[in-house]
Image (cartoon, rainbow, N blue to C red; front, side, top):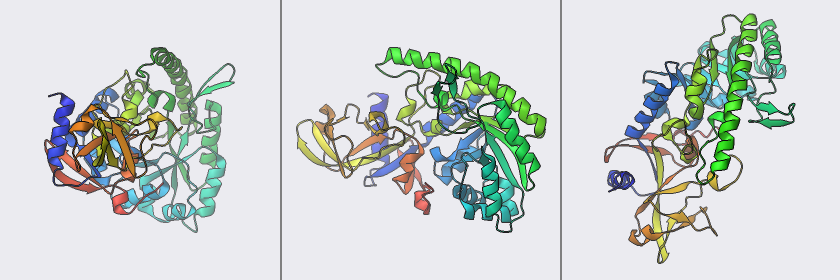
Length: 400
């Protein structure tokens, strides 16, 4: 029996009492992935990206481990909810325009001391001040450096369209604007190199493309090391007590951790290891989060139909954004239908051994987005479900 077949047997036994659709997290794989992230971080703390987990119980589990400290959140409402739930040191990774939430933040000493908000424009400071509604608490802020790799005089840009602050001079100017403005405290700088951390460099069946990606990433890392260090020197000249410099992501942990200017690493997807993280030379994780759909039809030889399954991931539309049929091994989508809204045909020899009601296990393309489809995660140890915990959705929250 192959290791994947053994995993399927375990998952089927563990969830035999549960009807699909159902979602699980294999705790042995989850913990092994956490250990690997810590090893790659080389002693620097890892701030957990909550968008890639979306389950309070699993956030608590990983933060209880050595090597992890703090949360990187994705909305201000989520940040306040987590802070009220007892989490501390929450860095909101994206600017917000949630005026009501800013009013809550500025009025509550506990929230204000626990949550750091992201800015990359002086107008965001004005928006926060206008939203205070009488709240006088000092708001902790972090500046975001744009990490995009620019070549040919800036005519070619590689990287996400995030912060407008690309140069050390621009970041330092905003740092001075924060320092001059009462009611704010500059505590951190973040720089997320998504074109390195979030792009696989070993794309199956595309050796030339993979080599081009590796060459691009090597050049981008070299450029960013120098620019990030210069940026932090410039910011520390304004804010010498800067608390943290955050960088990286699951795909670049060891590279970013090697930079002296960086004090902590961000990672989250590496805990679940969704399908988009299969194509890296820098690490190899174990799939920990899966969902199962039930077989409801057998249209013909070599074909079964499962209920639902059309759970596409965010990003530029493409085949790589669909979940992948994982167990039993050897199933594939019908190219004319793909993953459907209410039913999904699957082709392949294993279909002939599946009966009505059997489970087909899938891996989502991205990590936490799976949790938007399920209100609970069943935690598997060995061949047993040892706990069932709510996702954000299961607690009544869909923050985005």
